Image 1 (tube, helix red, strand yellow):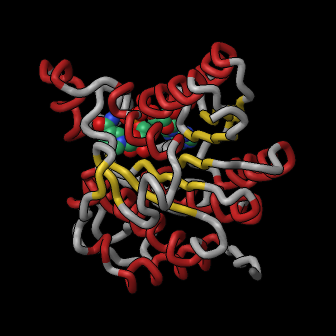
Image 2 (tube, protein in one colour):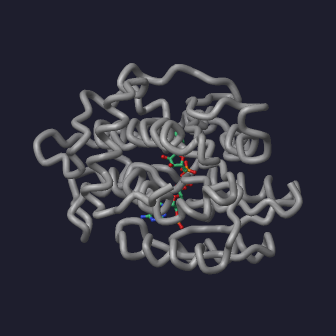
Length: 278
Ligand SMILES: NC(=O)c1ccc[n+]([C@@H]2O[C@H](COP(=O)([O-])OP(=O)(O)OC[C@H]3O[C@@H](n4cnc5c(N)ncnc54)[C@H](OP(=O)(O)O)[C@@H]3O)[C@@H](O)[C@H]2O)c1
């Protein structure tokens, strides 16, 4: 683990913060990425560098990618972990996308693609914090990032987390032979600030008397820490969806390679991205 450079988004609290602490304790060079002032506090405690970006603004993601590219010629692990339920009503970001889809998926897609050359050169692992909620996505239209016609809070979150799984699978399908290993995972139902701002239907689980039954952020970080600290192709199978360190079949839609390809193509168009020549 010594010298491994591990970039974790959403590392200012919850699962990402716990993963950052556990990986730092193993000797990794953790790069703490967050949105709030707490990011600096966590980084100071870990003696780690930190970066701030608000994923509701894609210009912040572009700036973050530029700073990471400039400061880290090697990135061994990129953990796309930032996210959660962003609103209890349909809100469009300044970029014109539905907010939960943007923060959980589009921002991670953009960051990863802007770092692609570094990630390939580093033979990096790219890990997506998805969720069991991908099973509740409803039918996914791979070109719909605004959810103008069928918004529901749970459906939006489910779709975003389904997109995370499809993204990990497609990233792996396209770039594993070039050196990247990608996986998605479900952390469990974890006692975090997950729905602190816009609870909606999630309040019962995360804020009521049953909150104490949820697993700790340390436990929730376990599969992320394991994926980040072990060896792809030897210890875990790239392209898979994991839960409790074991591969699990995600929803039927998440296993559809055509849907994964269509989603990739429509995302690159929506974000105006060019794919690098390999
Ligand atoms: N908790 C669960 O039961 C559960 C279950 C399945 C999946 N997940 C997933 O696990 C991941 C981590 O969530 P958590 O449970 O640890 O919740 P959390 O404690 O609320 O952490 C969320 C992290 O995401 C960051 N974030 C939120 N909005 C952002 C934005 N607009 N721009 C940049 N960063 C932003 C937060 O940054 P700041 O704090 O700095 O604002 C924070 O570091 C999420 O992707 C979530 O969907 C959680």
